[in-house]
Length: 320
Image (cartoon, rainbow, N blue to C red; front, side, top):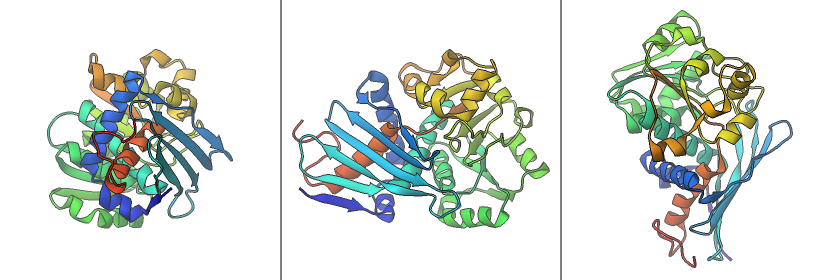
């Protein structure tokens, strides 16, 4: 049995953001069709260790992701994604941190493409951590960006993020950094798209700060004690989630709004369902909330396996 191992830089070199977006979109459609087995995520050590798995019935392939989380270190995510196939004796093991950032960006790209206003967009990114750069790359893959404001408490960290993005921002005419306060509120009021990528325990802004028509992505809060968005925003917006059961179990924003009686479980639309059936009666404000599901990791690992394992093509599997 052979094992192909890919480092973070190798994952990045192998998969582009447009490829990742398309792969995640197709996986979500498969999820909506019932093609996946996906047990609930195992959360250990008060959320410091996560184990996720998904099995794709049509191809007979599966992934298991194990990782540790510590926002006080860099990188915050350390672990591995293992891809296997019932028809093969080789397997792929890849860096979990890079796959997590890439697939989280990709699902935001899918949601933004479906929900955000058409045309050039003013983007506000709240947060400048390890997930932030792929939020920008994903939005840019589906919308022209005419302005970007990075809101972060640490201006130096925000500037470092802009430097990391480098050529990705070459054609963005307006790029700025803002601290929380009046400058951030002004940027949020003018935003067409907002991406939140923080480990916040309380909402980052009030619903009244946002413009009348805006799409908001929230990816940072993955535990019930974490919240990036105010419940009032969820009450008035169309809310899509990666998977309803996962969001109700793990999202602090969703649980808080449901417990307060501001939304019901049936108000939550799954992104895969919306891709397959269309968005009913869209509202001026839309929200996409993801806690991360293993299907997304499978989508990226499947791309990597197709590129790295001999005899495996992107269109199908051997031995299935």
